[in-house]
Length: 388
Ligand SMILES: Cc1cc2nc3c(=O)[nH]c(=O)nc-3n(C[C@H](O)[C@H](O)[C@H](O)COP(=O)(O)OP(=O)(O)OC[C@H]3O[C@@H](n4cnc5c(N)ncnc54)[C@H](O)[C@@H]3O)c2cc1C
Image 1 (tube, rainbow, N blue to C red):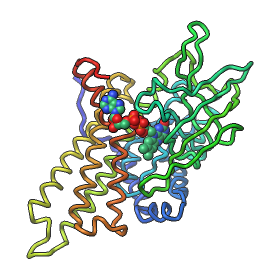
Image 2 (image 1 turned 45 degrees about the horizontal axis):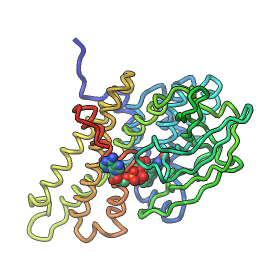
Image 3 (image 1 turned 180 degrees about the horizontal axis):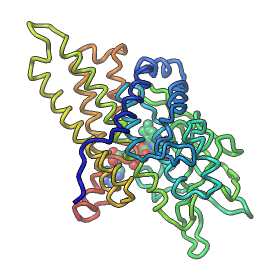
Image 4 (image 1 turned 120 degrees about the horizontal axis):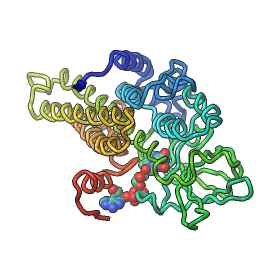
């Protein structure tokens, strides 16, 4: 009989400790200062890469750590829990790294994976379009053949970190030679390609990572910009989208832990009557509830990552969705409770929690919204009729 483990292996615990130490050296103050000054988290990113923490999921032969999504998500969770999350890990190492590792040619792996693992190459990921949103079957960015080359035309929106990226993995649609129907295909597009341009979208919270609308006006790409089989359909895409959801959940859990830790510290010392405010159940119970919900969400992403690492893509898909849902909820709830525990201080720039409360809502919206996850679970886990 195989054993069910609810503790992480010693190597991952050591990895967590090392990442927490490094990210803690930078912390929330560093990230906020960079955001306020229009800077990036470059020093942290580079130090994480130099220590081998960014590419833990990539095979050793391509310069990575030879671990899995469980390791990568643990790294991101620790960064977020230290107040210094690295959003681009979700796209570059998790989505793009996973898709290229599984479906890239040997030449593509050699070209891109070592740089992604080290952090020298940042690859953004573009699927969302303004008129498609949650329904990615509606995307209209098209790829047409012109001799040996591909020509991409279309627009993308809310694409993270394009100003920090040398490349973007774009989901476009190519015409099927046999049926004439459009099918999803993945292309690596250099951000300095002719016909490629970007426009920043001002967002309501302060963060070093920016979001962009992308314009692809007849961007010409060589034949080997196509990753994977052009007839594979959605399978290749989900090799990246399940890791994205697992990482989204880990990011949210780390953020929730950061907010909860700050709130607990504050509740222990802030005294306005005879005893610290944490003595009152009106303060203690919401914190205890957040702790329970955080541990539930963490178990879900750990299970999703374990299934993904074991090669069970179907099981990973179900649990990655549920984990992303639970992560988004606890990030919103924990940051809300943390703000409330801090009273007026919770709304100050100095404490940074109100900014985090807005940022936490990202976990409910992206990469797939709470409602689309509920649709998925209702239909696939419970067998209810499709509602949309
Ligand atoms: C900060 C940020 C970073 C992002 N980074 C990236 C990135 O790097 N790359 C990328 O490709 N995309 C990125 N996205 C896009 C993100 O994945 C989308 O915002 C998300 O998929 C939702 O799409 P939408 O915003 O168009 O919302 P819509 O699809 O317009 O949905 C609006 C609302 O309607 C609800 N809704 C829609 N359909 C249904 C339904 N059938 N049943 C019930 N409710 C429904 C949704 O749940 C949501 O609440 C990012 C978004 C943000 C905010």
